[in-house]
Image 1: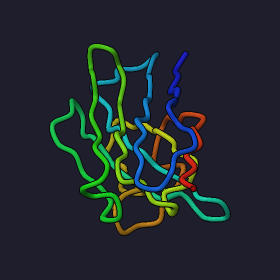
Image 2: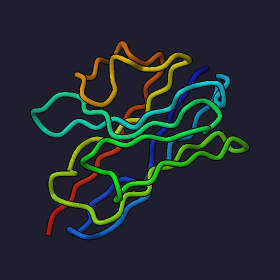
Image 3: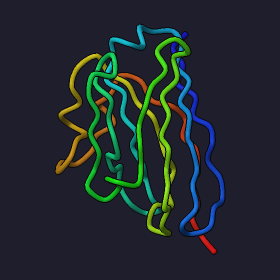
Length: 130
């Protein structure tokens, strides 16, 4: 059974940090593009960050560059999103998603469609508030 399970969300004050985890099972994890996507209340899906297959390279949306860091542990089949200097506008449900092909339909500058990824996690809530 394929599973992507996010964890690590919670309530944090502005300027604080959280580390999200995405544990994968049931598919060839290292051969997939893994992305973090978020959805704020009342808004659509928004691409945040991506790791290419095997972790060869990473990319970030401009609004998180310098604050968020994506990484993966292929031995444990886990992808992390370290989030620092959090802002209230980072409040959202954060999802990890995986696909064997480059997710052109959910990438910088484009609308994000669920169909861009073969697998999605259930999401984890991040709330940034004082």
